[in-house]
Length: 402
Ligand SMILES: *Cc1c(COP(=O)(O)O)cnc(C)c1O
View 1 (cartoon, rainbow, N blue to C red):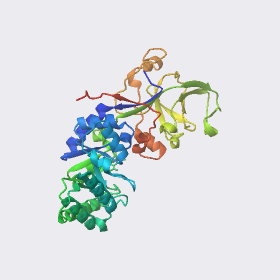
View 2: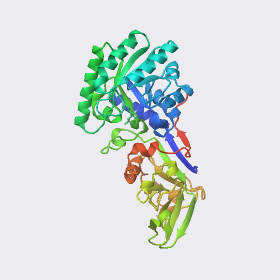
View 3: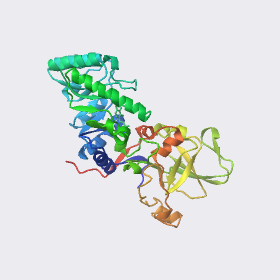
View 4: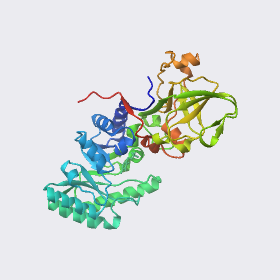
Protein backbone atom coordinates (compact mmCIF):
# COMPACT_ATOMS: atom_id res chain seq x y z
CA UNK A 1 0.00 0.00 0.00
CA UNK A 2 1.35 3.33 -1.06
CA UNK A 3 1.77 6.15 1.47
CA UNK A 4 0.69 9.73 0.81
CA UNK A 5 4.36 10.59 0.44
CA UNK A 6 7.38 8.59 1.51
CA UNK A 7 11.09 8.04 1.03
CA UNK A 8 11.71 4.31 1.19
CA UNK A 9 15.28 3.45 2.14
CA UNK A 10 16.50 -0.05 1.38
CA UNK A 11 19.00 -0.82 4.13
CA UNK A 12 19.84 -4.08 2.39
CA UNK A 13 21.15 -1.97 -0.49
CA UNK A 14 23.23 0.13 1.94
CA UNK A 15 24.70 -3.04 3.46
CA UNK A 16 25.47 -4.51 0.02
CA UNK A 17 27.08 -1.24 -1.10
CA UNK A 18 29.32 -1.17 1.99
CA UNK A 19 30.35 -4.80 1.52
CA UNK A 20 31.05 -4.29 -2.18
CA UNK A 21 33.04 -1.09 -1.68
CA UNK A 22 35.05 -2.54 1.20
CA UNK A 23 35.98 -5.47 -1.00
CA UNK A 24 36.99 -3.48 -4.08
CA UNK A 25 38.79 -0.69 -2.19
CA UNK A 26 40.58 -2.94 0.26
CA UNK A 27 41.81 -0.37 2.79
CA UNK A 28 42.32 -1.51 6.40
CA UNK A 29 39.73 1.03 7.57
CA UNK A 30 36.48 2.25 6.06
CA UNK A 31 34.61 5.37 7.20
CA UNK A 32 30.91 5.62 6.40
CA UNK A 33 30.11 9.31 5.93
CA UNK A 34 26.65 9.92 7.38
CA UNK A 35 26.60 13.72 7.57
CA UNK A 36 23.43 15.64 6.67
CA UNK A 37 21.13 12.92 8.02
CA UNK A 38 23.00 10.33 5.97
CA UNK A 39 22.49 12.34 2.78
CA UNK A 40 18.78 12.47 3.59
CA UNK A 41 18.43 8.72 4.17
CA UNK A 42 18.18 8.82 7.99
CA UNK A 43 21.34 8.86 10.04
CA UNK A 44 20.76 6.27 12.75
CA UNK A 45 19.45 3.39 10.61
CA UNK A 46 22.11 4.02 7.97
CA UNK A 47 24.94 4.26 10.53
CA UNK A 48 23.91 1.01 12.23
CA UNK A 49 23.58 -0.77 8.89
CA UNK A 50 26.94 0.48 7.60
CA UNK A 51 28.69 -0.65 10.80
CA UNK A 52 27.05 -4.07 10.69
CA UNK A 53 28.11 -4.42 7.04
CA UNK A 54 31.78 -3.72 7.70
CA UNK A 55 32.39 0.01 8.11
CA UNK A 56 34.56 0.63 11.19
CA UNK A 57 34.37 4.43 11.35
CA UNK A 58 31.59 7.00 11.03
CA UNK A 59 32.13 10.51 9.73
CA UNK A 60 29.96 13.59 10.08
CA UNK A 61 30.53 17.27 9.42
CA UNK A 62 29.66 18.83 12.76
CA UNK A 63 29.35 17.99 16.43
CA UNK A 64 25.57 18.28 16.53
CA UNK A 65 25.49 15.37 14.11
CA UNK A 66 28.10 13.48 16.12
CA UNK A 67 26.20 13.90 19.39
CA UNK A 68 23.01 12.63 17.73
CA UNK A 69 24.83 9.37 16.94
CA UNK A 70 26.12 9.04 20.50
CA UNK A 71 22.62 9.89 21.81
CA UNK A 72 21.34 6.92 19.79
CA UNK A 73 23.80 4.67 21.61
CA UNK A 74 26.22 4.25 18.70
CA UNK A 75 29.70 3.83 20.15
CA UNK A 76 31.77 3.28 17.00
CA UNK A 77 34.78 5.49 16.26
CA UNK A 78 33.39 8.78 15.02
CA UNK A 79 34.98 11.86 13.47
CA UNK A 80 33.52 15.38 13.11
CA UNK A 81 35.51 17.93 11.10
CA UNK A 82 33.65 21.24 10.78
CA UNK A 83 33.42 23.47 13.84
CA UNK A 84 32.07 26.90 14.68
CA UNK A 85 34.36 29.56 16.12
CA UNK A 86 33.26 29.11 19.75
CA UNK A 87 32.63 25.40 19.86
CA UNK A 88 32.87 23.82 23.30
CA UNK A 89 34.88 20.67 22.62
CA UNK A 90 34.52 19.22 26.14
CA UNK A 91 31.32 17.21 25.57
CA UNK A 92 32.81 15.71 22.39
CA UNK A 93 36.00 14.69 24.20
CA UNK A 94 33.96 13.13 27.00
CA UNK A 95 31.97 11.12 24.48
CA UNK A 96 34.99 9.87 22.53
CA UNK A 97 34.24 11.85 19.41
CA UNK A 98 37.39 12.40 17.34
CA UNK A 99 37.88 15.98 16.26
CA UNK A 100 39.07 17.22 12.89
CA UNK A 101 41.43 20.14 13.35
CA UNK A 102 41.76 22.90 10.77
CA UNK A 103 43.58 25.62 12.71
CA UNK A 104 46.03 26.19 15.56
CA UNK A 105 43.21 27.99 17.34
CA UNK A 106 41.02 24.87 17.24
CA UNK A 107 43.90 22.70 18.41
CA UNK A 108 44.53 25.01 21.39
CA UNK A 109 40.82 25.04 22.30
CA UNK A 110 40.76 21.23 22.18
CA UNK A 111 43.92 20.90 24.31
CA UNK A 112 42.42 23.38 26.75
CA UNK A 113 39.19 21.42 27.09
CA UNK A 114 41.11 18.15 27.43
CA UNK A 115 43.23 19.65 30.19
CA UNK A 116 40.16 20.78 32.12
CA UNK A 117 38.66 17.30 31.79
CA UNK A 118 41.90 15.47 32.55
CA UNK A 119 41.47 13.45 29.35
CA UNK A 120 43.32 12.96 26.08
CA UNK A 121 41.48 14.29 23.02
CA UNK A 122 41.81 12.29 19.80
CA UNK A 123 42.31 14.57 16.83
CA UNK A 124 42.78 14.24 13.08
CA UNK A 125 44.76 17.12 11.59
CA UNK A 126 43.16 18.26 8.36
CA UNK A 127 45.55 19.52 5.69
CA UNK A 128 44.41 21.83 2.93
CA UNK A 129 45.99 20.23 -0.15
CA UNK A 130 44.27 22.43 -2.70
CA UNK A 131 40.57 22.96 -2.03
CA UNK A 132 41.10 26.23 -0.15
CA UNK A 133 38.24 25.42 2.20
CA UNK A 134 38.83 24.22 5.74
CA UNK A 135 42.06 22.49 6.63
CA UNK A 136 45.41 23.76 7.76
CA UNK A 137 47.08 26.08 5.31
CA UNK A 138 50.35 24.57 4.02
CA UNK A 139 52.59 27.36 5.36
CA UNK A 140 51.24 26.61 8.86
CA UNK A 141 51.75 22.84 8.79
CA UNK A 142 55.14 22.74 10.49
CA UNK A 143 54.07 25.10 13.27
CA UNK A 144 50.82 23.23 13.98
CA UNK A 145 52.57 19.83 13.87
CA UNK A 146 55.05 21.09 16.46
CA UNK A 147 52.19 22.41 18.60
CA UNK A 148 50.41 19.07 18.34
CA UNK A 149 53.57 17.15 19.23
CA UNK A 150 53.90 19.33 22.35
CA UNK A 151 50.28 18.64 23.33
CA UNK A 152 50.96 14.92 22.82
CA UNK A 153 53.91 15.12 25.22
CA UNK A 154 51.64 16.87 27.74
CA UNK A 155 49.09 14.07 27.30
CA UNK A 156 46.35 16.48 26.25
CA UNK A 157 45.97 15.42 22.66
CA UNK A 158 46.61 12.32 20.57
CA UNK A 159 46.98 12.80 16.82
CA UNK A 160 45.13 9.71 15.63
CA UNK A 161 44.87 10.77 12.03
CA UNK A 162 45.98 13.14 9.31
CA UNK A 163 43.59 13.77 6.46
CA UNK A 164 42.64 15.92 3.53
CA UNK A 165 40.02 16.11 0.80
CA UNK A 166 40.28 16.23 -3.00
CA UNK A 167 38.75 18.61 -5.53
CA UNK A 168 38.11 15.94 -8.22
CA UNK A 169 38.86 18.79 -10.66
CA UNK A 170 41.04 16.57 -12.85
CA UNK A 171 43.35 13.57 -12.50
CA UNK A 172 46.31 15.98 -12.61
CA UNK A 173 44.87 18.20 -9.87
CA UNK A 174 44.20 15.16 -7.68
CA UNK A 175 47.69 13.74 -8.29
CA UNK A 176 49.12 17.08 -7.19
CA UNK A 177 47.00 17.01 -4.02
CA UNK A 178 48.12 13.44 -3.26
CA UNK A 179 51.75 14.58 -3.56
CA UNK A 180 51.11 17.53 -1.23
CA UNK A 181 49.40 15.20 1.22
CA UNK A 182 52.42 12.86 1.19
CA UNK A 183 54.75 15.79 1.86
CA UNK A 184 52.48 16.73 4.80
CA UNK A 185 52.71 13.19 6.19
CA UNK A 186 56.53 13.38 5.94
CA UNK A 187 56.58 16.72 7.69
CA UNK A 188 54.34 15.36 10.46
CA UNK A 189 56.64 12.37 10.95
CA UNK A 190 59.61 14.74 11.16
CA UNK A 191 57.75 16.65 13.90
CA UNK A 192 57.44 13.39 15.86
CA UNK A 193 53.81 12.60 15.05
CA UNK A 194 52.88 8.99 14.29
CA UNK A 195 49.17 8.93 13.42
CA UNK A 196 47.59 5.50 12.92
CA UNK A 197 45.37 6.79 10.14
CA UNK A 198 45.98 8.72 6.94
CA UNK A 199 42.88 9.38 4.88
CA UNK A 200 42.27 11.37 1.75
CA UNK A 201 39.80 9.69 -0.61
CA UNK A 202 36.04 10.04 -0.70
CA UNK A 203 33.99 7.77 -2.98
CA UNK A 204 35.32 9.05 -6.32
CA UNK A 205 39.02 8.81 -5.51
CA UNK A 206 38.56 5.61 -3.51
CA UNK A 207 37.25 3.98 -6.70
CA UNK A 208 39.47 5.54 -9.35
CA UNK A 209 42.66 6.75 -7.67
CA UNK A 210 44.27 3.88 -5.73
CA UNK A 211 47.19 6.16 -4.74
CA UNK A 212 44.72 8.18 -2.64
CA UNK A 213 43.50 5.24 -0.54
CA UNK A 214 46.10 5.27 2.28
CA UNK A 215 44.84 3.50 5.41
CA UNK A 216 41.20 4.63 5.31
CA UNK A 217 38.67 5.95 2.82
CA UNK A 218 35.69 8.17 3.64
CA UNK A 219 32.71 6.90 1.69
CA UNK A 220 29.54 8.97 1.40
CA UNK A 221 27.65 8.86 -1.89
CA UNK A 222 28.66 5.27 -2.64
CA UNK A 223 26.96 4.02 0.56
CA UNK A 224 23.69 5.29 -0.80
CA UNK A 225 24.22 3.51 -4.09
CA UNK A 226 24.73 6.63 -6.18
CA UNK A 227 27.58 7.34 -8.57
CA UNK A 228 30.03 10.21 -8.02
CA UNK A 229 30.85 10.08 -11.75
CA UNK A 230 29.09 11.51 -14.81
CA UNK A 231 30.33 8.61 -16.92
CA UNK A 232 29.33 5.64 -14.76
CA UNK A 233 25.95 4.50 -13.47
CA UNK A 234 25.55 2.95 -10.03
CA UNK A 235 25.08 -0.44 -11.62
CA UNK A 236 28.36 -0.11 -13.53
CA UNK A 237 30.05 0.53 -10.18
CA UNK A 238 28.34 -2.46 -8.57
CA UNK A 239 26.10 -0.23 -6.44
CA UNK A 240 22.36 -0.20 -5.78
CA UNK A 241 20.51 3.09 -5.12
CA UNK A 242 19.00 2.88 -1.63
CA UNK A 243 16.32 5.57 -1.75
CA UNK A 244 13.02 5.50 -3.58
CA UNK A 245 10.96 8.69 -3.37
CA UNK A 246 7.31 8.05 -3.96
CA UNK A 247 3.82 9.34 -3.34
CA UNK A 248 0.21 8.55 -4.09
CA UNK A 249 -1.75 10.41 -6.73
CA UNK A 250 -3.80 12.93 -4.72
CA UNK A 251 -6.23 14.03 -7.45
CA UNK A 252 -6.94 13.42 -11.11
CA UNK A 253 -8.78 15.54 -13.63
CA UNK A 254 -9.46 15.70 -17.33
CA UNK A 255 -8.78 19.08 -18.91
CA UNK A 256 -9.62 20.48 -22.31
CA UNK A 257 -7.05 21.59 -24.88
CA UNK A 258 -5.65 24.98 -23.87
CA UNK A 259 -6.11 24.55 -20.09
CA UNK A 260 -3.28 26.18 -18.13
CA UNK A 261 -1.44 24.25 -15.43
CA UNK A 262 0.04 25.51 -12.16
CA UNK A 263 1.57 28.94 -11.46
CA UNK A 264 2.18 31.18 -14.45
CA UNK A 265 0.52 28.66 -16.79
CA UNK A 266 3.97 27.61 -17.86
CA UNK A 267 2.29 24.74 -19.67
CA UNK A 268 -1.05 24.49 -21.45
CA UNK A 269 -2.63 21.22 -22.47
CA UNK A 270 -2.01 20.73 -26.21
CA UNK A 271 -5.13 18.55 -26.42
CA UNK A 272 -7.83 17.20 -24.15
CA UNK A 273 -6.12 14.93 -21.64
CA UNK A 274 -5.70 13.62 -18.13
CA UNK A 275 -3.63 15.16 -15.34
CA UNK A 276 -2.49 13.63 -12.05
CA UNK A 277 -1.66 15.68 -8.97
CA UNK A 278 1.34 14.55 -6.90
CA UNK A 279 1.55 15.79 -3.28
CA UNK A 280 5.28 16.62 -3.18
CA UNK A 281 6.86 19.99 -3.82
CA UNK A 282 9.94 22.03 -3.30
CA UNK A 283 9.32 22.11 0.46
CA UNK A 284 9.95 18.39 0.27
CA UNK A 285 13.11 18.82 -1.75
CA UNK A 286 11.61 18.33 -5.20
CA UNK A 287 13.62 20.93 -7.10
CA UNK A 288 11.54 23.72 -8.62
CA UNK A 289 14.25 24.05 -11.26
CA UNK A 290 13.11 20.68 -12.66
CA UNK A 291 9.68 22.15 -13.58
CA UNK A 292 8.85 21.16 -17.13
CA UNK A 293 11.76 18.76 -17.55
CA UNK A 294 11.64 15.94 -14.98
CA UNK A 295 9.67 12.75 -15.42
CA UNK A 296 8.02 10.41 -12.94
CA UNK A 297 6.76 6.86 -13.07
CA UNK A 298 3.07 6.12 -12.48
CA UNK A 299 1.87 2.54 -12.69
CA UNK A 300 5.18 1.64 -14.25
CA UNK A 301 4.96 4.21 -17.06
CA UNK A 302 7.03 7.35 -17.47
CA UNK A 303 5.19 10.68 -17.69
CA UNK A 304 6.33 14.33 -17.80
CA UNK A 305 5.85 16.86 -15.04
CA UNK A 306 4.02 19.82 -16.54
CA UNK A 307 3.86 23.39 -15.24
CA UNK A 308 5.70 24.74 -12.23
CA UNK A 309 6.61 22.52 -9.33
CA UNK A 310 5.00 24.30 -6.36
CA UNK A 311 5.82 24.19 -2.65
CA UNK A 312 3.60 21.21 -1.92
CA UNK A 313 2.55 19.67 -5.20
CA UNK A 314 3.11 19.23 -8.90
CA UNK A 315 1.11 18.04 -11.90
CA UNK A 316 1.86 15.20 -14.29
CA UNK A 317 0.35 14.86 -17.75
CA UNK A 318 -0.71 11.27 -18.43
CA UNK A 319 -2.27 12.03 -21.81
CA UNK A 320 -5.09 9.60 -22.58
CA UNK A 321 -4.02 7.06 -19.95
CA UNK A 322 -6.25 6.68 -16.95
CA UNK A 323 -4.79 7.13 -13.52
CA UNK A 324 -6.67 6.90 -10.25
CA UNK A 325 -6.43 8.67 -6.93
CA UNK A 326 -4.16 6.50 -4.76
CA UNK A 327 -2.06 5.15 -7.63
CA UNK A 328 1.65 5.04 -6.88
CA UNK A 329 3.99 7.68 -8.25
CA UNK A 330 7.74 7.02 -8.15
CA UNK A 331 9.86 10.15 -8.58
CA UNK A 332 13.14 8.30 -8.46
CA UNK A 333 14.56 5.01 -7.30
CA UNK A 334 16.68 2.22 -8.74
CA UNK A 335 16.16 2.06 -12.51
CA UNK A 336 17.84 -1.35 -12.56
CA UNK A 337 15.60 -2.90 -9.92
CA UNK A 338 12.95 -5.32 -11.10
CA UNK A 339 9.66 -3.54 -10.60
CA UNK A 340 7.29 -5.05 -8.08
CA UNK A 341 3.81 -4.62 -9.52
CA UNK A 342 1.61 -3.18 -6.82
CA UNK A 343 -2.14 -3.54 -6.65
CA UNK A 344 -4.35 -0.62 -7.38
CA UNK A 345 -5.94 0.65 -4.20
CA UNK A 346 -9.19 1.11 -5.95
CA UNK A 347 -9.60 -2.04 -8.03
CA UNK A 348 -7.27 -4.40 -6.18
CA UNK A 349 -5.95 -5.54 -9.55
CA UNK A 350 -2.26 -5.25 -10.45
CA UNK A 351 -2.12 -1.90 -12.15
CA UNK A 352 -0.21 -2.91 -15.25
CA UNK A 353 -2.53 -5.77 -16.03
CA UNK A 354 -5.53 -3.63 -15.22
CA UNK A 355 -4.70 -0.71 -17.47
CA UNK A 356 -2.30 -1.91 -20.10
CA UNK A 357 -3.35 -5.51 -20.31
CA UNK A 358 0.20 -6.46 -21.15
CA UNK A 359 1.84 -7.46 -17.89
CA UNK A 360 5.18 -6.65 -16.31
CA UNK A 361 7.11 -6.42 -19.58
CA UNK A 362 5.36 -3.11 -20.11
CA UNK A 363 7.14 -1.55 -17.13
CA UNK A 364 9.64 1.20 -17.86
CA UNK A 365 12.60 1.80 -15.57
CA UNK A 366 11.90 4.35 -12.86
CA UNK A 367 13.89 7.61 -13.09
CA UNK A 368 17.12 7.86 -11.11
CA UNK A 369 18.29 10.60 -8.74
CA UNK A 370 20.78 11.42 -11.52
CA UNK A 371 17.90 11.96 -13.97
CA UNK A 372 16.43 14.48 -11.53
CA UNK A 373 19.81 16.11 -11.12
CA UNK A 374 20.08 16.52 -14.90
CA UNK A 375 16.57 17.98 -15.04
CA UNK A 376 17.36 20.46 -12.25
CA UNK A 377 20.92 21.38 -13.23
CA UNK A 378 22.47 19.89 -10.10
CA UNK A 379 24.06 16.65 -8.85
CA UNK A 380 22.52 13.49 -7.43
CA UNK A 381 23.99 14.33 -3.98
CA UNK A 382 21.75 17.40 -3.75
CA UNK A 383 18.63 15.56 -4.91
CA UNK A 384 18.67 12.98 -2.10
CA UNK A 385 20.14 15.22 0.61
CA UNK A 386 17.42 17.86 0.27
CA UNK A 387 14.45 15.53 0.71
CA UNK A 388 12.59 17.40 3.43
CA UNK A 389 11.38 16.71 6.95
CA UNK A 390 7.78 16.40 5.79
CA UNK A 391 8.60 13.20 3.92
CA UNK A 392 8.57 10.23 6.30
CA UNK A 393 11.40 7.74 5.80
CA UNK A 394 10.53 4.10 5.93
CA UNK A 395 13.02 1.27 5.93
CA UNK A 396 13.21 -2.02 4.12
CA UNK A 397 15.47 -5.01 4.69
CA UNK A 398 16.75 -3.95 8.07
CA UNK A 399 19.40 -6.23 9.51
CA UNK A 400 18.27 -8.16 12.53
CA UNK A 401 19.54 -6.38 15.68
CA UNK A 402 22.79 -7.59 17.22
C1 LIG B 1 31.20 14.63 2.37
C2 LIG B 1 32.59 14.26 2.56
C3 LIG B 1 33.04 12.97 2.18
C4 LIG B 1 32.19 11.98 1.42
O1 LIG B 1 32.23 12.29 0.04
P1 LIG B 1 31.48 11.37 -1.04
O2 LIG B 1 31.84 12.00 -2.35
O3 LIG B 1 30.03 11.49 -0.74
O4 LIG B 1 31.99 10.00 -0.88
C5 LIG B 1 34.34 12.63 2.51
N1 LIG B 1 35.15 13.50 3.15
C6 LIG B 1 34.77 14.74 3.49
C7 LIG B 1 35.72 15.65 4.18
C8 LIG B 1 33.48 15.17 3.19
O5 LIG B 1 33.10 16.41 3.53
